[in-house]
Amino acid sequence: GQKSVCHLSVRRSSTVWTRHQRGDFLPDGSLRRREFNGLRLRFEATGRHRRFSLEKLANTVATLVVLSRFPRSLVMFVCIYMLGHLSAVYSQVLVQTFNLREFMGGLSLRLLVANTAFLELMDTSLTEGGGVISSCRMREMLGAILKKRGNVLDEKE
Image (cartoon, rainbow, N blue to C red; front, side, top):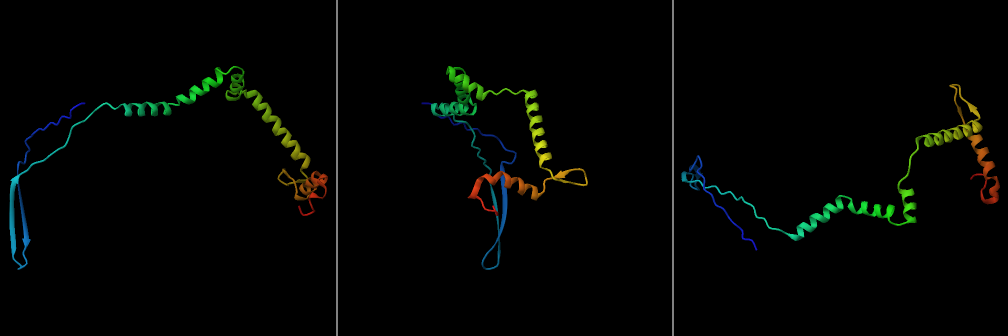
């Protein structure tokens, strides 16, 4: 094993001698003054102690592997490229292509269908130029849809 080494150094301070005065009141009411003189010593504990630890190295490597997302990348690589036909299925699910033209076309058609359905159901026009579906119209349409349910629903439902 390695030996620990301790280094001791002595440096001269600007204030080597110290002087301190203190006054105390005694129980009989008199004052006692004391003067303390002495040498000022200051101790500093510094230094380094190093040694190789296989446990710390393994812990650091494992932490780096986990934090670098290496395991996830490895599993993704295996799933997409090394499982034959199953890889083709995985890659279609995991790597989705985005076509802006198809997306905008689908969005436009969904908006058109929603607008057409609203215009078909709208029965009240507003003075500002818009329209609404009244609660009577809503009840009428829901009643027509749920009419085939028979005796499962009563009038209040």
